[in-house]
Image 1: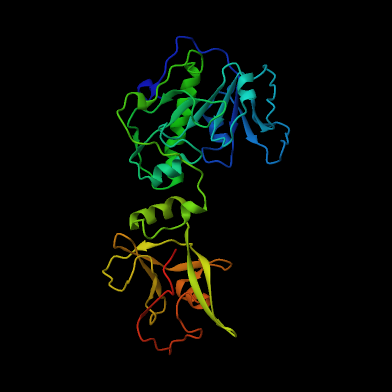
Image 2 (image 1 turned 135 degrees about the vertical axis):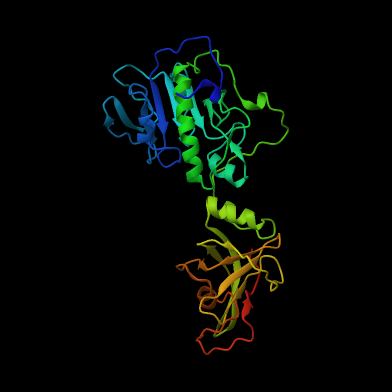
Length: 361
């Protein structure tokens, strides 16, 4: 166990009762593997459960991981272990709303470990949004399970405000930092009987003076990777690339057929991301309008100016429907820039650079 002063807890007057937790964990959601959770839990505590991939549920036989520890497939019908019915539900990175009827069937309701300082970053992707917001500190929260809403239960234990320093640059690194804290907080909360009514809240926001709006940690999707050159600084872009990349844009292509010029919009994916150009560059007419630089060299690069005046460099690009390739080859093959189809070492270019037909959108 970790010392009690290492995080805030809401103490109850009741001693911890005999409890039989049913623990729900989705292995596809970051937050630690079943075996890592079992490794820190007393043998009599945990039964781990996963959501069924089939509509209506498809229960599987329990699989013994070690003596007295089992894996169930969730079909939204609580299994009955030999010791008697479950009286406490525990959700760990579960990703689904546990039905109110199941919570009501457990004498002590449910508990959840959430890797943020709730009410900051409620939702399914708190680790991603913590890094995207460039927070300097974070923490973990032990809360009760609300019957109809995500992350709106009572906070019974939490890292003291303002949290621990973030020494992580990726989601995997931040998960490695918060997961052990969450596991230890959960175990001490169980030992301390923090789930026993009457429950006292221990949230940081009750003692910290703040007026800021809390950010919802929504699930990361394509829109979060859609690069906005008019609003994102170079640091913003590199951070998003690191946390949720690869990023993407659309741009106009131009090809010549029997019926003349044809223009269409295509998605391009910055599959290998960008790096910051160190030297000065004065070639760019507008923010977000790519230029291929080094046409007379063996490996031309794509340069793009950001809204804060920096320049990012891309070595390769993936055009929708194709494999990733060198930026110059992709631009030539797909008509992203006015480059002759046939180019060899004898080809003469009027300049050492050429701009894309249109800015990135």
